[in-house]
Length: 254
Image (cartoon, rainbow, N blue to C red; front, top):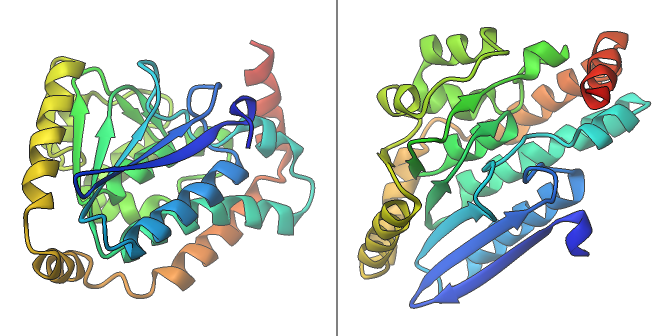
């Protein structure tokens, strides 16, 4: 995968695995990146050298711009649409079933699928500039695939607020107060220091105890393989609408 098309890289140091994803368009998530990210998370979970996992994105701009508009507007049939949104399902399910605790580092603004990744982290640490938005309803689709992860983290009321108010940003303070973020920091340096300290601490902890804790934290989500596929089917149908096609076309013309 060339850098022009994005990248997903795993590095391991002192029993800490770090997965970094990147795309030149705001760290957006085309299908290939989603599948590579899911695969890398699964492989890291199976690697005995790794005791704790960090997921981050590259750069100092957006943490994640969400779904790739280039791919969304190119979808012309239901099965292609479903398979695109299954990419998000694969990532969320990989994070859910990974036996390692996952720290998510959110350094900047995040939209849609990026909010899903932040929500699926077992511990999510963000910079104070990391505003969040679920813009899917404005596109004519809705946050169906990421919905279970976001609702699990913030509750139905806050998830409703994010889902319905689809054009406005919610501050990192809002995300912290509603449980999407576990901690926030005013600078990238402080953010990275906090993540490093927590990761080092966890890397020294019992792998068995952390695995058992993770299973307890995710209790009640055992049906997500089927649930997220059903949600991908809804999005795969709606993305074919004239409403969505026109919205994306106008957005790209700005």
